[in-house]
Image (cartoon, rainbow over all chains, first blue to last red):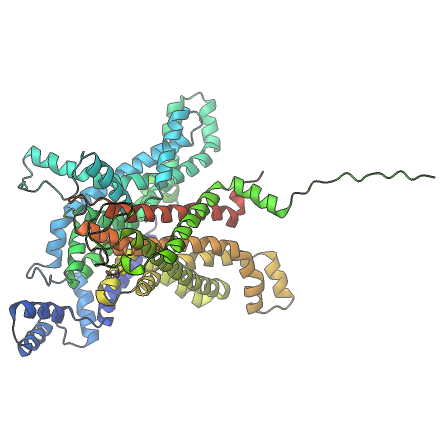
Length: 333
Length: 299
């Protein structure tokens, strides 16, 4: 891969991040709401101090956060602080910064995201490849069908249905939250880890069940094309065993475009992940976001959105840059 | 002299109706999808005519009642009759989807045609903006927009507007690609040589040929818009007073419906939403076949 291409993709990444931070800067400022005033008006209602004091507090906070400077300077400060990964402070949990909140909850999100994405990618591609493989036994090929039917059910709805049938009716698994109430988080005790894992099963299932079908469909399409290729025919005539052809000639080649698909799907996957987390009350980014929404903690909302956007865009570009390592045909160009 | 009348062998030509029926028999996903939509439409219209819409709003009926002959879907914590809420909610969800879908596809058609037909700088700018915005998860930006609006002022029309703000890039890129390929076809060259103007070629030659494709893209757009507005509502960013399907699930979850045993509260809107999205996905699959003749099944 040429240096020019790498530089091109990196410039594109910077453009995307700049666009995202510009959007998150201007949209809130177009709105007539003033988060600091709203926050202190709320406190004033509870604590009972006079309107003059309120104005004084708001003015001093505006100075502290630089909100009294001209808009272009605020914009410049904002973009440069984003470049330094400084996303501001939480209005509700001050002096905690937005980055603190994100870092506390990020491990939960990443583990769930990683496990569900890998599982559905592996399961979907395997089932899809088998479904398109004419020598596989019929029952094995039909295993993919139920997953294709489940594709129409978004993860959140799957979550509600699973909660009802498995959690509520059968009482097999807990109805949400990260671990049983009353348990002290202690990552060295096995019973705590098992308890956490038990609470993760339903959220993970609701994310996996709906997304396997997509991989099945695209892999099956890919598989059908590859079966017609000369090298598969050649391998058959060489007398290689069915399993070797399946593994080395067929699956390997069909998998390549799927990896690109994985990068493209990332945005949707993260979105579903966040909404499912808030449905199940898991302490990941999703719950921080929904709590911030309910508490009008604007800087946290904007910070999380910006953080995820940058992460997704960066990962997409990284996968694109790593792609030639997987596919020698691109490397030679 | 007698002339022997040779009877013409009758060619059995199936009528248009029979042909349509036969086609529909092959394209089962379209039929099933349309039937579910029809069922939901009958449910909603029948409901709109028979219920008192006030029952879909808080404090109208006795709260927390399980399903019974009086309240077939039960009532929720805030005293909404879930049957009435379902009728109003289905109607509002459909409205958001259709408004946002129609607006998105209109912007997509206008920008896609402008970009592809005129090319040059216009094309590079439109394409560039779409490509830079595409990797940004639209849903997250929608969260920001919805979050900056005062929750008391959010209506279902604001919801549709928020959704459409970030839903035009995909149709624009797709339609642009279609127009680009159509531009090279011979009938366009013939029209150009015969002295037809740009506007004439766009509206009389290219647009009519793209209509099936645009119809399929419209259904996809309605699906995506409903999906986006549903997710926003599940996070608590919808018009909180309205019985939108996503709002009902958000409210049920934040009141711990399953913990308290009010299972009917989240289940009813969830099943309704599965039916809507499932039927739209089926219709989209069926329409794809019409729009893309290469995968059309023949007898």
